[in-house]
Amino acid sequence: MAIYLRRAFSHRNYLYLIRSSSVLTNPRNYSNTILEPLCFCNSQAATILAFDFLRESRRGFAKGRKSKDESGSTSVDVAIDIGPTVKENAASLMDAAVVSLSRELSKIRTGRASPGMLDHIIVETGGVKVPLNRIALVSVLDSKTLSVNPYDPDTLKALQKAIVSSPLGLNPKEDGQRLVAAIPPLTKEHIQAMCKVVSKSSEDVKQSIRRARQKALDTIKKDGSSLPKDSVKRLEKEIDELTKKFVKSAEDICKSKEKEITQG
Image (cartoon, rainbow, N blue to C red; front, top):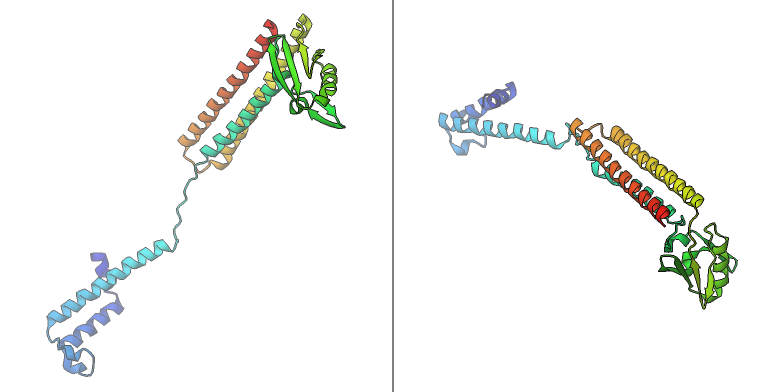
């Protein structure tokens, strides 16, 4: 209250207050003013006017503070939570690496029949080169035999030629409007060579996952400067846990493939 009184009683406001009080207490001096009809001829009226003036002044000061806030003269920085975006991007890159690994390992021939082992074979038919799985349905008859059913019977010869020319060592035979391919047993040298390929693929995918981790950490360092230290550490820990999860997934896939190769 003391602050408002001090502000209200500036020199200019004080003169205005004195003039207002004089008019009310001495109406004869201002008989031509608009206050004469009111006939406030006592000090009580002056007191009322004074307090009304103070109340209006107080409102003015309050409004001034509000408009100052609304004008945006003082800005407040709000830290943006980059955590969800960083984790989503990292998980997307890591998952893509694991999916690519699965696709590559499916091309490796083992002693067991698998429909995906022919997906990488390219067939030339009608002057156009297309993936085998686009023009034929591959299914497993048993653990040692594959069946290849072309969507167009006219492509049967082209399919047979492509499979024989592949490095899988298969020799499919015609069986009506389909091809039947027996999976020969793997030699010891073939098993060792395939295990090395799987091991190399495992290291490659781990490097891809670690690169995705490093990219996420760099983003946190660059864009997370406004975040609290605790939030940064928690986000880095979550990225590390995500990395371990995808590395383990890749290792499990490679171990399963090695087992499939060695045990036939």
